[in-house]
Length: 258
Image (cartoon, rainbow, N blue to C red):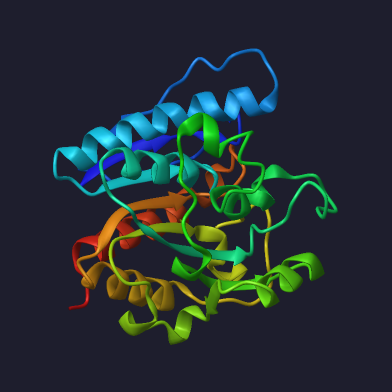
């Protein structure tokens, strides 16, 4: 695997974001001088850098893993895999749907639209500048998504996009062919003490997440993985918990369930 470190939350670089990368894991830092323009230009500049890194790693025969500050990085990863000649399906593991739009969002938070952007919403803003071809909705699996707004539920009811509980996930549930995994750690139950930015009550424990990761990796079809550490920077009291959690997840990627 090739590891990358992208300490950004949307278009904001967070150098103090607590990424407790385990000892022995060497990660290439993704650092972009973002233009002082509108948010779309800044996001495209960041995702372009991500896409280039992922494409190069994939062409070299590696499975790139990005440790990032949010899920939107997966947009650049999908573009990079396509540039390397791959056509991955998407497995989106998240406590939330990330399926809002600018027209439906109650908060205006762009991170809550990450999967929708990847699926081609407002393609002129992000997908087209990156040359991204949105995946077919029937090749997308949403895992967990226990915290959905009414607009997101309505969207899911009207599309072939599938949804599955993490605890019930099996290899047969996964899309066929190569997959890009977006793994948002806010999927974990808040009792795991990661203190995510956007908590959702309930949810799976770490044991269930590790089992799901091993199941996905065991298919041999994982083209790339984004581990989204969606927490606020500057919380050293939880560093030990975060370090153990991330180390366990990375170990699970290396010890798949056949």
